[in-house]
Length: 241
Image (tube, rainbow, N blue to C red; front, top):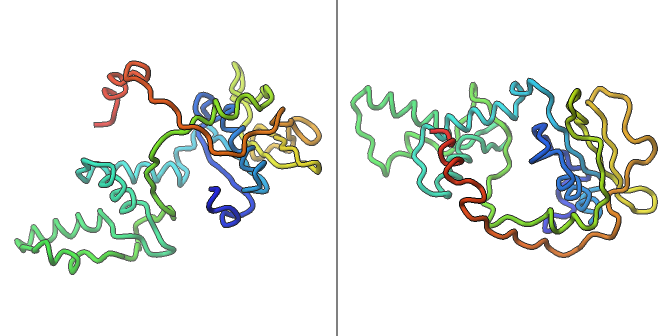
């Protein structure tokens, strides 16, 4: 983001699940506030999806991705990224070479008892196909993250103790969050219960996010966790087969 400063637009909008542990928390708020503080965006915000959001285009893309992954053998991260690009990557109205189209043609070729040399595959399976019936998700890119950064430990000492937005016993909390600078250059946050709500909380300019100036250098890399810390056996056992 630092390298692409000024090329990403003026506003950042992130769509997230309504989970406090991973998404709706002070660490996410602090990171988005830092992006505004560094003038990478004029304003940033995120929306936590309401119950029943599995019918949105974003959630549908996960179903398409799962089917694509189940249809291909992947033994390395590089191969997995190729499959992701194959299934979701698009350029306007033209989708990248489709795994599903390729599989369909392979079945037709097999039924016709034709042998297609590997060197001639591209003649049968062009790199770009028009998607008359295949839904395109306009995914820009898929990249491998080389490490995980410790944003929580990096920013937590500098932020105010903001609360009142998480899921409670009787309500599911706030869903839309907006961060922007005030006239004096301080980053402030406001939130509301839904996109249809006319009332933003708190009244006025909003809560100030940082109590001290945040760092302007790169965050430190997070330390590795031992297998027992993240319960590797349990996680491995719950992975979709």
